[in-house]
Image (tube, rainbow, N blue to C red; front, side, top):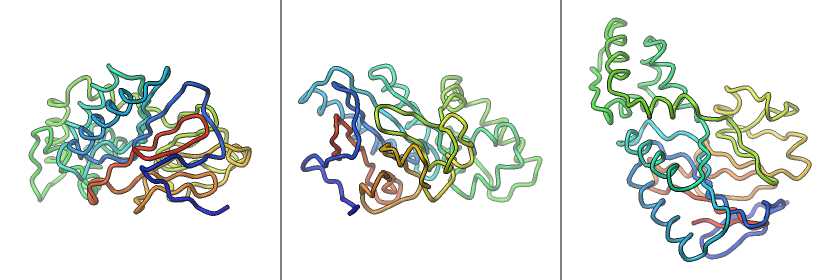
Amino acid sequence: MIATELTTSGWTPSPTRLPPETRIYAIGDIHGRADLLQALLERIARDLNDDPIRMPMAVFLGDYIDRGPNSAGVIELVLMLKRQLPTICLAGNHELYALRFLQAPHTGLAWFEVGGRETLMSYGVSVPWHLAPPALTTVSEAFANVLPNEHFYFLSTLGLTFCLGGYLFAHAGIASGTPVAEQDQAIVTLTRTATEDPLIERGVVLVHGHTPTNTVVLDGNKLNIDTGAYVTGRLSCLVIEDCGLRLL
């Protein structure tokens, strides 16, 4: 099958479909870019106003935090959207890093290398550049003290996969031959190769992020919608409706 690049100018046929009167706005890795998410949510609101549908919903593919400047603001925006629109929020590997740091401060150095410092700064927690183990515990406790309860609950209750119609959503990918309900957390949030699976072979399209790409492309039965927002300034939103796909 020839790969098809999606555009904002029209619909691309999909090999599968959603239930009637349903529309999904699937949003890729945000990584602390609250400014881009704010603009995107405004565009979603305009899209729904211009073209209403009975059952709209948003699906976030994870990696809300780290690297960009305003992780706290991103989570606040997602929580606001959840009060306005049915919303599914999946876990990315970066959310798991933050939770792990709260439970095991010694993991902080590894987290800081992939954007944890920026997340802590967005909550007003300063992080010295040279940290001994006791200092990691101090920073972890400071993070726990300022992290709003609603934000902690959000991070702690993220799902791993979501299925609707002929679509399967996951942050990174799935393991071949393993039922969706039994997928390993590490595979779903970390794999760089969205492997083939019997479910996929039966016509299910996998929508994922995690691995930055220049454009959103329908490649067989896979759609990677991570366009590296924190570096490129492009936060992708895939619109799925009936048996069509488009970019917002």
